[in-house]
Length: 83
Image 1 (tube, one colour):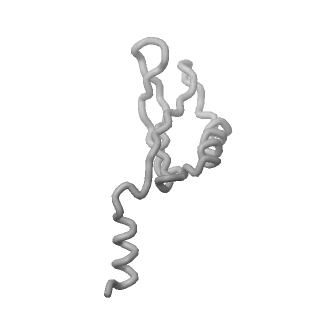
Image 2 (cartoon, rainbow, N blue to C red):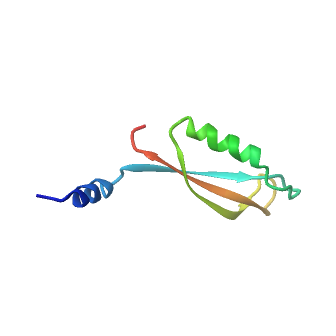
């Protein structure tokens, strides 16, 4: 008979128990400071759909105009599959 720890581990290791979403968050090409209010709104918008923040990664994010990149964030979100 498995112990509680073994049962929890086997449940956690179920393939595809979670789904993930990566959201690009960047400011203007002028290099404005990061707007924490905008970031908070983006996170809360996704939280309404069951997404939880898993990680934030600083990255050069390609802009919509031209080949250059600007500093931005990649937000990795997670939620249980099927939500």
